[in-house]
Amino acid sequence: MHIDTLRQRLRALGALPKHEQRVLRDWVQALPHDRGRRRPEHFLPLALREALPALDAELQGLARLISEHPGEDGSARLLVGLADGQTVESVLLPREGLCVSSQVGCAVGCQFCMTGREGLIRQLSSGEIVAQLALARRLRPVKKVVFMGMGEPAHNLDNVLEAIELMGTVGNIGHKNLVFSTVGDPRVFERLHALGPDEVKPALALSLHTSKAALREQLLPRAPRIAPDELVEAGEAYARASGYPIQYQWTLLDGVNDGEDELDGIVRLLKGRYAILNMIPYNTIPDLAFRRPSWDKAREIARRLHQRGVLTKLRDSAGQDVDGGCGQLRAREAKGRSIPIRAA
Image (cartoon, rainbow, N blue to C red; front, side, top):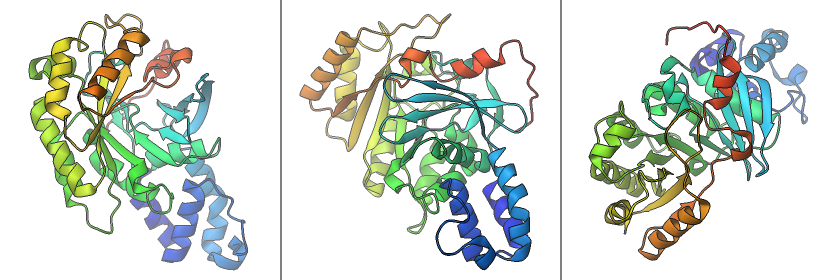
């Protein structure tokens, strides 16, 4: 279900804009319809009131909890079932954050990512993306949403931006707390720059991972051919236009992108930029050759970069203790199970 389709259905049931916003707000914020003084029987049109139970059930069916895997860090990996039998992953993050998926699978094929190994199966609708937030809020409060789960948001741009617009309005998520994460795609920069002053403009996270163009092509084989220098220039332009610093993501791979040459490259690219470097030690995945560096090594790299003028935050991937690298829950659950594939 797409948000625009849902709005059309509400209008067909007699909803005026104030009724439409009330129903959408209750869904996205996981609120009961009968809260406060304006109860449905005194406020909503009769046809809409009568349709609400079936509509609520349909919306809850967009994303249902299959399993929850709490981590010692306060996170929780969620395996989420979709209406057609497919599954995606969401992550409840410490400090009231949520990581959502935008696709079933992913076409970028990052060599160190479990999701990329299965390719793209289908896009998520804007409703399925928002439904992950509605589901999460039934479990705990959420004040920040990052699009860093399964999939490449740039490849599902219309649905992701439609979901972001709803989250940043009736969903009551601050615009700077909506973080659009991408490997880098010219279409993303074009669309974000074109957003009007009354539209929700998210913060931006760019997957950098290396300062070397050739190595980036190896690690992200089907990402757009944007050299790290070009990516940073495009990011800097959006940072200055939006007023939000760019978050550059760097998955730290032992012996691959953690050498002195890469540290020099990071300083060359990011020193003096309106940016934050999020350095994340790799979440080891069985059967892949990449390895996670020691925490002491990662901490030393972050310290040295900070000393050299690059604001660096060393982050641990949520859910390390539950073997929760993105795509692993889905892969384990799907093993030996036939899942229908629906065209995007």
